[in-house]
Amino acid sequence: MQTSNKSLYDVIIIGAGINGCTSAYFLHKAGLKVALVDKKGVASGGSGAAGAFISPKISKEGILKEIMETAHLEALKFYTEFFPEYTLQKPLLHISKTSEEGGILKSFKNETLLNLTQLDENTEVLLSDEAKNAESICFSKGAVVDAQGVCHALVKGIDFYKHEVQSLHYEENIWNVGNLRASHVVLSIGAYPKIIPLPYLTLRGIWGHRIDIQTSTVLPTILHHYVSISPTSQENIMAIGATHNVHYTPSESEPYNVEEGRRELLEKASRTVNLKNVKIIRDYAGLRSGSNDYIPLLGSLVDAQATLNLHPQLQYGRSVASSEFVNYPNVTMINGSGGYGFVLAPYLASRLRDYLVNKESLDERLSPARFFARWIKRKK
Image 1 (spheres, rainbow, N blue to C red):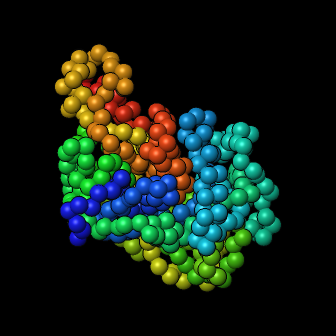
Image 2: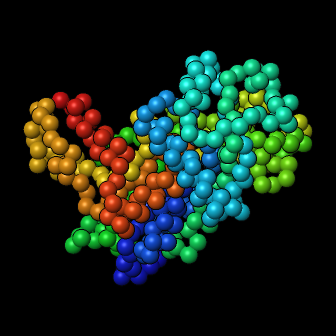
Image 3: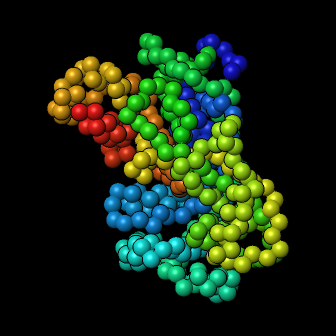
């Protein structure tokens, strides 16, 4: 990383996936001096490989359903209004894979505030019998985003540094990241190794694979079934993906088998729709991160050792209010979005902006501190 020893920023964001890029965009627009740092480049990991479908999550009543419905609407507005050249808006058809999922989908239909529509006849004739007979729901508005294109557009005009951050140093109210200095650090490093000690926080690595294909089939709707299938802004090009595998992380001894991944994606797609004259154009693959309770992370980070030193009674089963935990100063994490990174990013980043710029409180339900409290209970 080549820069002056006196490069002082308001915020340094570590990690240039969709969360990092969207955070940089909102903070930069709010007038802060922002630096974005990533060891490989913008959208070089899981975000660059994402299908980037802007779709709601079909779930039961609760925090996640509430957050996802709001995030879905905010994401649709954000991408179509500010990045229309990277956004293709289409109706969205979600088809259940199992009878259990069909039951959840039925309940969702009755409770959702999102606008629904009837299935388009031109889409229906393309569906397999299995897909036609399964429980489904059709949203009037969905979208697919050019993942790499929008990430690069988000950070246009923002200082970017290609650098692998292995540690942080805090001195005199300033964080030092290599030769960069800032009052505040935002960590959006996904499922990769943490750069400050967080023994209580484990993120699920979620491997994703997407393929772009050329096909003579014309699909007027975005489909979610066994995999996601979507038209793109390029004529005769469709995107299929991403296969999520929460038990796999590639390594030198076990590299990812691209050919096998392609076969899996095409086989699953064929269970939904008959695609004709298919030619694979390109592959994208990468690792994303999800929280263990499926709720995204946005908030301060507890310094576990400092908190235990201050409150040793925690180790003996006594409770301490989360407001009494010791946090790392001026550090915020934005992470754990799983396969909904492009849906959640505008929602999370706009609230991060409100927190840092307008001093508004963050939603405690998203706080990483919830995992510290659970970790302490397991240690008793």
